[in-house]
Length: 275
Image 1 (spheres, one colour):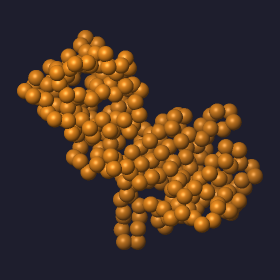
Image 2: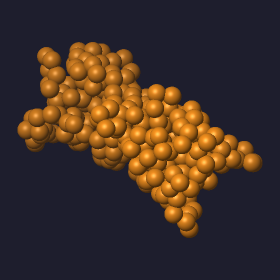
Image 3: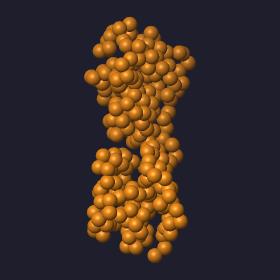
């Protein structure tokens, strides 16, 4: 994905007069530090900085993205495929949490036409001396085999049952970012109505729900569709999931993006439940 540079690079290696950031001597310490780290890194990296989201990037990213992105170190307002594909992971980083967007499909311009690459995007918040996030650093890596597999498979139709509306929204958005078709409901009765009206590949349910546990919901759903795959999410351990009579996977809250993706890959490999 990148050709290592033979020379060490730093902010002193570039002419910043043409950029909106001007001379590094007036930069805040956090920007000077992260820019040096980025410019001297062999991995493709870019930095979105400040309220104007000025875009800086290293030579490895410039080589990957092609002539359309300009020359390192950049310095124009942020407009780059990795940031456009960042979705919730990028928003999490701006809120102060490191995040991963696995298997992002990025399109770069080439002389013979557009080229699509599948990359894992690692977003890291950059804080100033007051602790406020002033920028986000994005590192690109070749997508892991698991991420490639998810994008090669057909999209799954997933029903998310989560009574916390904010959590429900985030899970659905993560699943959509993985390329799946997801819908969310807050109550088991609504879930049963959806399951009766249309077919889903995966039921992703919280264990603790109002009026009915996620386990009982899954049992009723499997009576109608024994081929349905089940993933549980729980913040209270696996006590309620012991000795179940049907195949399932479980995630312990809070879980990471890669754990959710791995669960989706593994659950589709599980044998179907019997009638």
